[in-house]
Image (cartoon, rainbow, N blue to C red; front, side, top):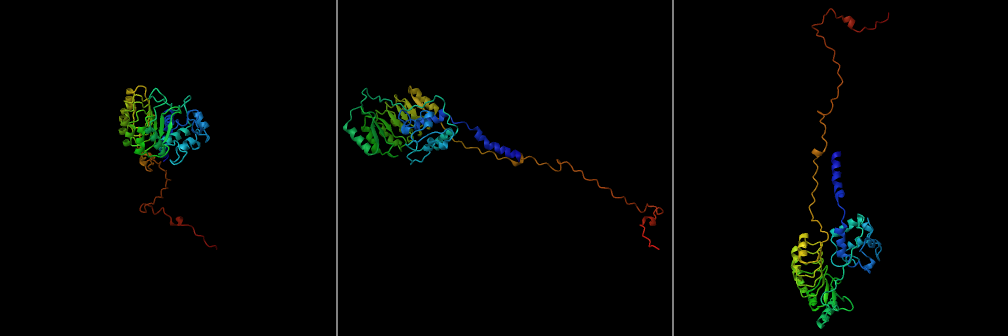
Length: 366
């Protein structure tokens, strides 16, 4: 039985000792780059929290320390990542909550001591200048564009100019709900100054992607965590001025990204947690000079865990000694042989004196 218990203990402890540490560069850095760094970088990070360095995370922001190495339960960065969708403190605030597999990686990384390679600094996204025209002030605002902007703002979309002295526009639908209607998206075609569009985390479908086709001056597009598939990506083939495209956590495959070969200005493509393979990324990189395709860390496919084979008690249990064969024979006390009975036929009657053999009786005193 001791042997059996030892084997079972080994099986239980093996997964813990064999588990590899979380790789910061492959698993944590891409998560921060795609979901956090946009708001938590630069001279004025959101909430006073900079996530560009480990020191910035440990220092924290307005809410105090964001990271306590070795203690995920005390680290606000992990707490905010796992809050319900309705909580205002959830990170990231846009779209659906992070997948459990992703937040589990963050938890494991923190509990392992939050190992951050020395010298690594995560830079926020650089604002590429729209390469639409030499005139950085943008295009003249037409009555149709002015009316479209008013309707978009009335519908709850966030519309703003990129700078005070320019007409270039940024439109963001992510602050007012998950659904976007067709009659709202159709207004975008009347906005020739639109260069940045954020639809991340919304219920955008392939059928609605047709409304993006007329946006020929679009420079930056965020479609991360949407329902867009390869079929919808085909509508982006004519966007020759598109510089940055975020398709993080969508159903895009190698087939879909090959349809971007005509987007010659494309320099940044985010396809982390998609079905895009290393081979597909290399194929597109061969067609677009200077493109940076960020695949991040690819989660391994889920495999069915093989149940440990049940130990055969007959094989594993030490064999019981056969008392007949193995146990030493106990020496039995030698029995005294009973006195031999003499054959009366052989006894000499002359030698037998009945008076001598009988016990003497006490004679009465005279």
